[in-house]
Image 1 (cartoon, rainbow, N blue to C red):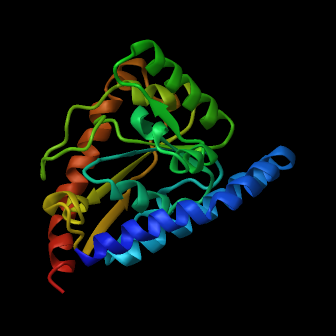
Image 2: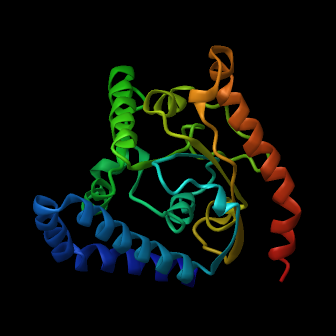
Amino acid sequence: MIRFILVALFVIIFLILSIPLLVIEWIIGKFNMPLKDKSSLAIVTWAFRVCLFLSGVKTTVIGKENVPTDTAVLYVGNHRSYFDTLLTYDQAIRPTGSVAKIEMEKIPLLSNWMRNLHCTFLDRTDLKKGLLTIKENIELLKSGISVNVYPEGTRNKSQDTLLPFHDGSFKMAEKSGCPIVPVTMNDTSQIFEAHLPKIQKQHIIVEYGKPIYMAQMSREEKKMVSKQVQNILTATYEKNKALAAEKNKR
């Protein structure tokens, strides 16, 4: 329980004390948006790393060399925990937005930092607004900003299976021309969701798969890309189960 209290206190203190930083970032953005993108990412990534440290979370990262460094990418990951976003941003190498649920937009200060990172807010109950969110992310990718998406659409409570993927997520890659990078995370729900409200230390395996370029696919292959990525995530998750179990015995 002490870890939960420490993380909650840090988040509250950070959000309050970062108000002047939000003002400074707003001013920087008026004159130099690339600098704002870089500084906002650095600030939030630092805060996420503190949260992971206070939570006792360690990571083993596999395949980081698979992530292209010369272009924006669409990160496609499995989703079982609030900590998934913290873990993926810890490895971000360029400005990166995320597709978040619309409810996150109502949280003061946190939503300000999310906007600074170019996060978008998806209303899953409104198809028209959902399409606008997809178009917004396509433009972000075209402008050089990577996007992190969880095509399951919600946190999965199952340990060993993935929820059906929403195909709309992959339109972002198809229409922007950016590569898809599968991101597989093992046992993230064991940090928090498996034993609410406690946070327990955990060793997480994060693996980045080889990039997938839809521009090189036939029309039929493009129709199957959602299933292809889902199969990659499932196979990688199974492959890393033993390693995750070994790491967490120590």
